[in-house]
Amino acid sequence: MLKSRNLIQPEDFTVEEIDEVLSLGQRIMKNPEKYIHVCDGKLLATLFYEPSTRTRLSFESAMNRLGGRVVGFSDPKASSTSKGETLQDTMRTVSNYVDIIAMRHPVAGAAAEAVEACSVPFINAGDGGNQHPTQTLTDLLTIKTLKGNLSGHTVGLCGDLKYGRTVHSLVKAMSRYPDTKFVFIAPDELKMPDSVKEAIKGHEFVETNDLESAIPDLDILYMTRVQRERFDDIEEYERLKDTYILNKEKLTDAKEDMLILHPLPRVNEISTDVDDDKRAVYFEQAKFGMYVRMALIMKLLGIKDPE
Ligand code: CP
Image (tube, rainbow, N blue to C red; front, top):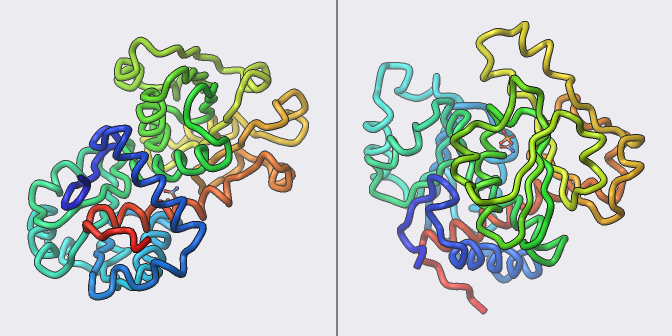
């Protein structure tokens, strides 16, 4: 039962509960017209303390497409945060106005702090370098829909594995499906944190800094941006930012049915000459994000599928 629950990290939901959300997302995707009034009279708050295009706009599109309405801010300077209001006081206040809250924050752990003060369902829309569970639901819906299942895949994750919250959430989530193998592709400075490796103990993973030699074995290649905003030393960012640039040539030995995913935004790590390759599904993935957020909103509000 997902009604009235919160989502801080993917493990907050069981595999069966995640499957419920993904299945509803697939039904919405097939017949979106059926769902245009299911959230009539409901209100979502999108509280974004950090920039976003996809997550915020897909949440807002999702609620609008379900018949609900949206309030919120995309610039905390325009909220009473700028007057010194605490995160918990803001959450307590906004809980009085809306039925459900989605929040993005630059500080790792802010979602866990915020939820303590919420009296309506709360969704973590990304907290610092920590977790991004709705991106993970997006990634899982993409893989389930385009591959047919979530088990038995060799998943390569490439780029900024240290600061990339999307890969932390995805690895933990995919480790719950049988026969998943991981290849962590990163420079030494941006390796997968030990805490994530510890969390998937017992699962097969290898670490390398060589993208090209890893590609032929992969069923899924998940590219990521080097997260400029998380670096204290900008010179280190400049040195590392172009470590990996995926282009058409590097795909020569890739499997025909490998999927190339990226949470976006991309900077330089996927050349635009890859965009028309049938394996490049990152813009489709962004669209799946809206459908899975529609499903998540319905589930947390306890709204039944009108089938
Ligand atoms: N994938 C993602 O979180 O994108 P935005 O930062 O644009 O929301």
